[in-house]
Amino acid sequence: MLKRIGVLASGGGSNLAALYDHLRVVGESRATRAELPQIVLVASDQERAGALERARKWGVPSAVLADRGAHAGQLEKLLDDNRVDLIVLAGYLRLVPRSVAGAYRGRIINVHPALLPAFGGSGMYGRRVHSAVIEQGARVSGATVHFVDEEYDRGPIIAQWPVPVLADDTPATLAARVLRVEHLLLPRAACAVARGSVRLDENGRISRTVTSQLPAELAFTLEAENDDTISEGISRLLPDV
Figure 1 (tube, helix red, strand yellow):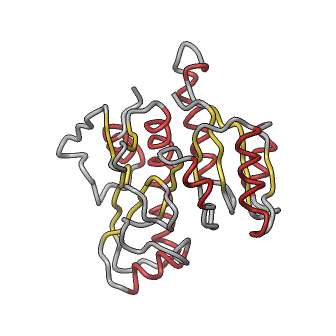
Figure 2 (tube, rainbow, N blue to C red; figure 1 turned 135 degrees about the vertical axis):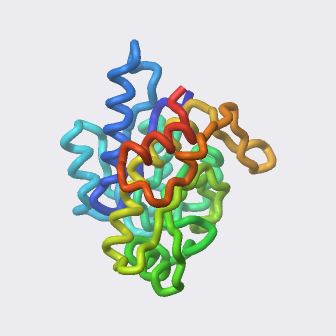
């Protein structure tokens, strides 16, 4: 079990909050919280990031990362000092230093607001992604959680969930629909990696110890607007066991 999670975020931290809440809710249903991973560090490259304020409110250690010149060394020290086992990128816009990506191979994950490998790569984040999806005429978008390597959005995919792109969508309305799925997908993917049921093998391929079973009525339900229905489907994909 990878019990100590460090979260990197550049913005308001809604995915961070989703992860925090998921761990709290699951913890309340378990006999001991010692069995669960905990968020032990929140760091941001933005001094005024809402993610840092959330961490302070929860009593979680937080830090502002230095500019790019000192970024790698400071991040490595923060991770070591806080004994981080698993890194979760939750809306983090910088490229992770190669030294960190290498040291945490198979223990660093990211959530991206599209169905990778489409609409990913350098500069593809936030509203830029959703604008590109609409401009290209895609009818389906979604969220992806993947392992992180030395390049933007290129690591092996852990899980994806689609959402429809509607005829009258704007980048803002599509972003809101995808974000709902991110909030459900990322926490479950993080827990799956933390407990070792999803991992990278020595060849860099995904290995799973739990076979997900999705009934037909839940498998990639594009039209579902009910969070409970989406949550149930994602729970089947990444069960909390």
